[in-house]
Length: 195
Image (tube, rainbow, N blue to C red; front, side):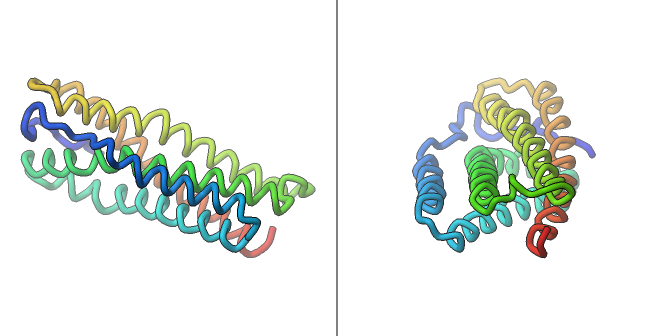
């Protein structure tokens, strides 16, 4: 996969990261905490499934729809798309991944999945491994790359070759995230039908 080319910049010095987005991040995390404290498995499961569907759907949409479209756009359109998309992803994807993983862990604990015997427990372990890999990649590679690109694009003279190196790694990581999202769907389908 070719990385998006960022050589045609938006206005230099433009502020891309809007911290006012933190209000809805806080609201979403408050809903998560409320679901964990409410004592309603239905509500907790609803929050978990909704966040998981959004996280997985956006990952797959980005990998299989937006990625190929970006590669076909001219340079100016690519840059315009990236400068609008990346700042939103900084807030959206970590929030969805944190809510999905936290509520999933809490549900598994409350429903006794951690106490299952082998071989059923292998499904729980598989889910935890995939979740850990997705989280490490998302928070350890994708989020910092989003931040670096946004901050670099705000400079008067962005270092485009450097950003292209970051974006090549970003695209590879996103593709791997898509594959792991499909794997987690398989695992969650097993949970839904009984392990």
